[in-house]
Length: 406
Ligand SMILES: Nc1ncnc2c1ncn2[C@@H]1O[C@H](COP(=O)(O)OP(=O)(O)OP(=O)(O)O)[C@@H](O)[C@H]1O
Ligand SMILES: [Mg+2]
Image (cartoon, rainbow, N blue to C red; front, side, top):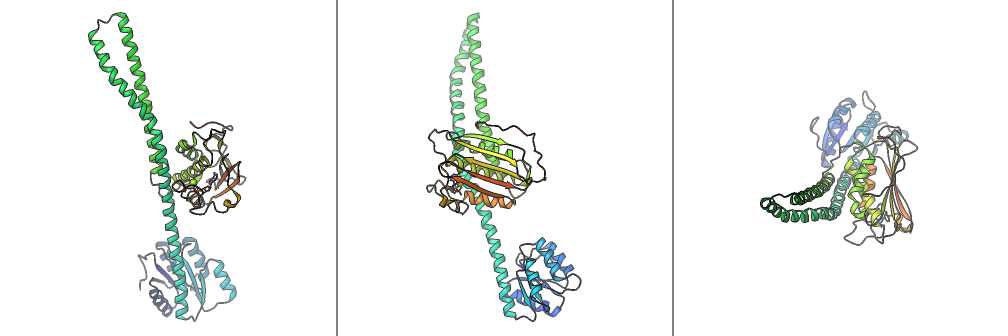
């Protein structure tokens, strides 16, 4: 039995002032394959829980000093994932309800049967493991979606990079031909006024070509930088995020999907900063913007993707991505946020985009909703808690701006 230090994730905290019960409970914990960590009172238990993560806790309701239910309340606030079972000799329905209301996993009366307690502890541990596994899978899905988006981007990047590269190369070819003949002309000529003027003209042509090459190379550099920023593992750190910048970055990255289908109309009003992970939010907006573009036929029609930012009535940051695409049939609306729901041909859509968007937005305590009318268009709306509860903009408010992405 251990009394302190280095509790592994699968440790069970036992808080009981009776030494004999601590021994029995430790024995049961070991029988279910976990490690018991014991404390005779709530103060010791608090010290242990401040340092270690517990899968479950067995808490005596009547402890010396701090009451078991008060300790439970504190434990739930610092380790919400820990499944706590309250064990007491003084149980009644009211205190059982109170314990469950405070978030206890279960409630047991003393004297208890070892088998019954073992069974309930097993359930508590199982539920803990399943939740851990769920969180792990969720993190893997977010990563998988990032990689899928990266694949999508890669196709766009190839397209984007090819155009400037083509003119960099053709201009280089031209310089290759021009320079030797220019040198020859300079060496062989007697530099009469007329000839000098023609040489100067050719030099000017060379300089302007060099500028074009530089511009093309700069474009390639920018594209590479944008993709690198997206590909970087964002980690989980949160920072203050300006939604305007995130939305602009997502639009820029999705440009190749939007360009021949729709105009982008921006309506950025005052919006508070939010505490979130910038790369994750970029992933959300990129998914929404690419979905919007994919819902619009490439028929040269007059289509729009509208992006809006504003402050909600309770000071929240609101964002909208709307399109004039094909809309969503009523029977699909309930399934949009389910994993692997897609109407796209295999190879084009995995059906993870919106599922991931929802889990990212919810991880920042936000919400995402959708409105759609078949044949008219679709609008996804996000709401995120503001970092500062005020409607002050991070930049001066601009009038409604309507512009095509370039
Ligand atoms: N703006 C939109 N307009 C019309 N339908 C949409 C729109 N956004 C999503 N959908 C519908 O919701 C489905 C699920 O979208 P989701 O982004 O989750 O997956 P996907 O786009 O099919 O695949 P991917 O995993 O590559 O994003 C889409 O297949 C499409 O039918
Ligand atoms: Mg999608």
